[in-house]
Length: 298
Image 1 (cartoon, rainbow, N blue to C red):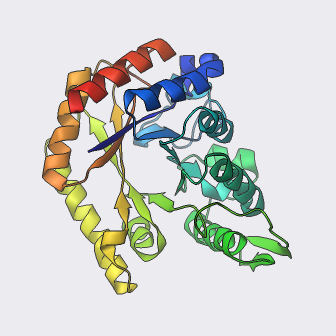
Image 2 (cartoon, rainbow, N blue to C red):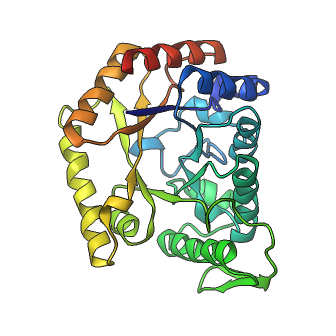
């Protein structure tokens, strides 16, 4: 089983950002298989859509560190772990700038980047980025098309209905492969179909505590991905599943480990990473909890 952790970047952890490189190195030495960052642009005070379908946004989202910089810092003190984004809100970014940032991380890490994308849920974040909230799915599709062009052709250019990139020379490319693997998040039929049709991996979520039948639900959703892959003449076995484990406040390390074991048994998925944002209140406690978790799962 592969187990990784999120790099602390929200709330009180954001004020210890100078310790990111130390954290990344310590986690690799402790046996982590991957390190992950997410993305929040702003936390609206009166949100039209709250987090997780609720009416509010967690206080932890009021402070957040830049995901690209964090992965760059982690790349300098690690040699083995995969470095992933779960997730970047891809439609908020201009493809040429997004490609440059991700390629820089991929080159700095010698090919360890996993580019995880989603479409987000906050209208205010789209307003802040100057991007319409409507047609997010189309914008994501065209962003993926543009990234593909930038990463695999030279000269590169792309013209879509919502996204365009002028033709240009693109000398800096990702390393060891035509492009970084692209993983997509989502639970809706459209997002699952998109994963099967064009992604290298799927990024579902496991809540702790969570529903007792969550493993069965994940198998059902993965079956939608597999069917879409077959319709697109792709081998479903080539599409990874990496599960994000969201632990709620007050959850014990033992509960997290037990949930991972149970979901792994129920699904045969074997790649997880844990977000301890609500569980640990400092970098030190995040490291201690992570190391304890690795020990329990070995």
